[in-house]
Amino acid sequence: MSKLLKKITIIKPDDWHVHLRDNEILKKISQYTGKFYKRAIIMPNLDQPITNCLKSMSYRRRILNSMKPNTTFKPLMICYLTKKTSPEELKQGFAKKIFVGAKLYPKCSTTNSKNGIKHIKEIYHLLKIMENIKMPLLIHGEETDPNIDIYDREAKFIENTLIPLRKHFPELKIILEHVTTEEAISYIKESNSSYLAGTITPHHLMLNRNNMFSNGIQPYLYCLPLLKRKKHQIALRNAISSGSKHFFLGSDSAPHFHQNKINNFGCAGIFNAPSSLLCYVSIFEEINALKYFQSFCSENGPNFYNMPINKETITLVKKPHKILKKINIGNNVIIPFLAGKKLDWSIES
Ligand code: DOR
Ligand code: ZN
Image 1 (spheres, rainbow, N blue to C red):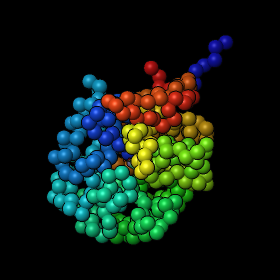
Image 2: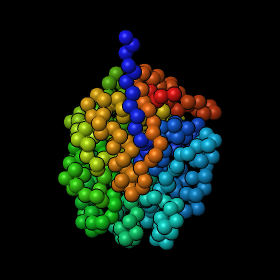
Image 3: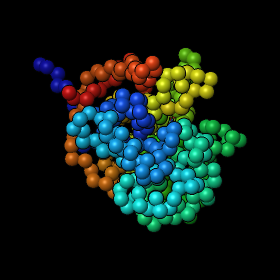
Image 4: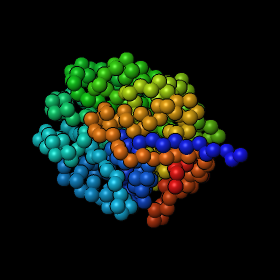
């Protein structure tokens, strides 16, 4: 008797946090996001950040042009907040659906964040407007004070910045992105608020900080926020296996050229777009939580952002899939997460 192939069909997911970059990188990598996801929130931290409507519209066009013809993929654009952001631009951009939200990068917290925010109060006037017009705020939640241990930056951000900010703007919709700690999970769960949610990456679910230092230092596992202790990885896994509506998919796929990863000042970022959904399904299966796979991938996000749930579906099959080893871009290469390794799941062809 032939053994039945294990399959799972879900509503086509959205990726609520991805870096597609620009120019030749964009052209080579956007297809991977387009294959798995119907919509994606495109991070605005380009070398020249997306700080106004004009830049955003033109970037959106470049993204669509980079996709396969007849794509139905929808990029969702975000405004990069600076202390100079024009309130009018923010209002108009949201009203005209050019922006679906705005992003707070604490200054010098990560890639291309030098134009970010030094003191949160610099943008309280913008946050007030966002609260009024119901425009979501996406947050890279790490304190940047060099005196704070790098492993504590997320927890300290919650304590020092996020809690006061939420007291001040109780009806501001906030997404704490790529949460990595037990503290973030508990804070979101205990808040139990329709104004607060978190995204979780596949790499923070699969790995912990030991993996970054096994067999030598592994630059390809360097991302921000850093991978944390195992107990935090377990807290993230428990969050998704609890079926909580406050968490959803955000891959944080963030490609960098090999030469910029392997460098005296190597860049932070894990390029997981070619396998992100397959990684998520493997984790949900491993922790016996497949019954919540669809809500995490395809329902909790649109419900939080007040957007329709997709109509298309996608089928994944339990069949080995080998992740590509590299992507050549001119004289450069980009190495994906888990390059050359095998996963148990593939997309149905
Ligand atoms: O690891 C990361 N890479 N974390 C971020 O917050 C930004 C991203 C990037 O843009 O490279
Ligand atoms: Zn990111």
